[in-house]
Image (cartoon, rainbow, N blue to C red; front, top):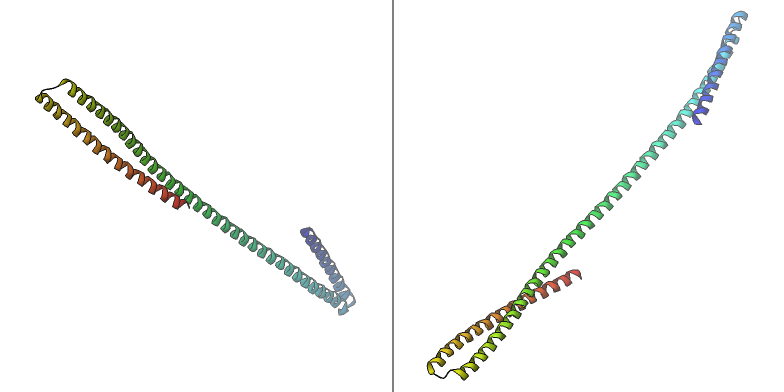
Length: 210
C-alpha cells in the first residue's frame, strides 16, 4: 500500500516536472519572439519554486522513511534482546532440571548401595541362625546319646576297666559337647554383632531420610 502511494507521488512529481519543462520552453520561445526577458524569467522562477518545494517534500519523505527505519531497527533489537533473555531463561531451567536429575540419580545409587549392604547383612544373619539351629540340634542329640550311654553302662558293665574305658569315652564326648557349646557361643556373639551393625545402618538410613 505504501509502495503504491509512493509510486503515485513519484508519477505526479514527474508529470509536474514535464509541465514545468514545457512552460519553460514556451516561455523561452515567447521571450525570444517578443524580445521580452520577463517571459523567460517567469517559467524559470516557477521552476525554481516548484523544485525547492519538491526538494523539501522529498526531504520530509526521506526523514519519515529514516524515522520509520530507525523504529524498525529498534523494534528488531528489542525483539532480539527479548529472545536472548528467553533463551537464557530456558538454559537456566534446563540446567536446574539437569541438576535435579543428577541428584535423583545419586540418591538412587545411595539407596541401592544401602539396600545391598542391608541385604548382605541379613543373608549373613540368616546363615548364622541356620548354623546355630543346626548346632543346637546336634548338641541335643549328643546329650541324649550320652544319657542313653550312661544308662547302658550302669546296666551292662560291672568291671572296673570297662567302666574306666567308658568313662574316658564319655569324657571325650563331654569335651566335644563343650567345644560345640563354645562354638555356639561364638556364633551367638557374631550374630549379635551383625544385628547391631544392621540396626546402626537402619538408624543411619532413617536419619538421612529425615
